[in-house]
Length: 546
Image (cartoon, rainbow, N blue to C red; front, side, top):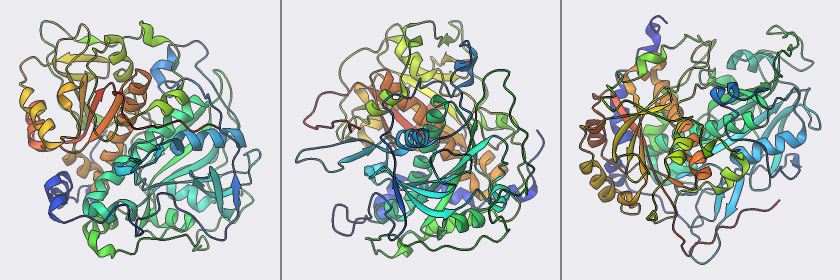
């Protein structure tokens, strides 16, 4: 695959940032913003004085959760659903199931009452979604829109087809493209409390949102491709983002998926006339939106500095990434051999994505998993697709996520307790000589609100920060956390289909986990997911009915 260019290997100083953002102790040393008062940032961005369009009620069922995985498609005759056009009902289903409100929490203890389809630290939801529909969309005008999940509505920001300037800046081309979706992050929503540590949380949630978009698009019969490397200034200008308090983190090109043997229409070359103002200089827009928190952004100056350092300007060079360089060496499976995670089990039955998303749960504020053994086929269901290739701009072809996955099995039928490495085969490779008891004790001590001792399994996702810096420069931090978020969301949603809650926790000792998986200091644990059945509690969380 070659070497990264010199300007992408400039990030030795990022060692400081990895240390800062991986240490929870630093968070508590710098203090917290007050939560729950009148100065809380609104959980939903609300524009003033702009046209709004309430979307139709989203479909209650959209398809199998696994249609976005190539392995699953190849094994099914017909290759799954396909869609050549995008209409208003499809947009409604896409946006609602990607990041809409799924359920509400009622009662006197409802501290965080509104729950979306993606987990968020303390339900702050810093992610914002923007959709630029093309003239080919049916029932929707071409233009740039912001998605308001609280009212399931679109706010119009610009009229007209996707400009050539934006296509060039994001590395996308017309062809079968139906719409561009931008995942942005409003830092203040999380940073007012978590300060600089919010950069990690925002990047993780952006990644989980991307993972959800990929799954929903697959179920709806669309192709989705993630673009991490784009000209930030052009994207911010197009959407009216200030680039300081709110910044774009990823662009998703959603295109037509045609049946086997179908022929796509000839793609227009970049720069072709689309009937819209496609000048290189997009006219600026400054849409007004409602602000409630007035805390000094200097309180999270480290976050702002890192995000500015991660910007790309001008024409981007999409250097193909050597995905293999990011992974730990393969482990010896030992005499027992790997444990295959095949699909010839009850898990091969249909897994309705909409139902899994409504059931997705983090275990409640105090997560005490129930005492119930997990059938092995359910563990296979939630793990076997975790490392499937992701369509992205890392390379010309879909590539495996740039993270490694280890699983600590605690209470699974027919699977001995212990540490395993997830192989993309897919299979679990047993690591029998690892002493995991100290890590389990550490997790219980560091995060007493989660009883990890009772978990059926615990998943550790890790990334090679040195390779991230080498290939992506200062952008590597957020790209690797987004890669981890994609995998974490896959596991969380399929865990819900298997009847489990999946609790993401950042409360762990990085060194202890690294020692357990026997990685050097270049390899950083970035996610921990505690999996178990949720017990009945006093929390009442009915799903929203459309």
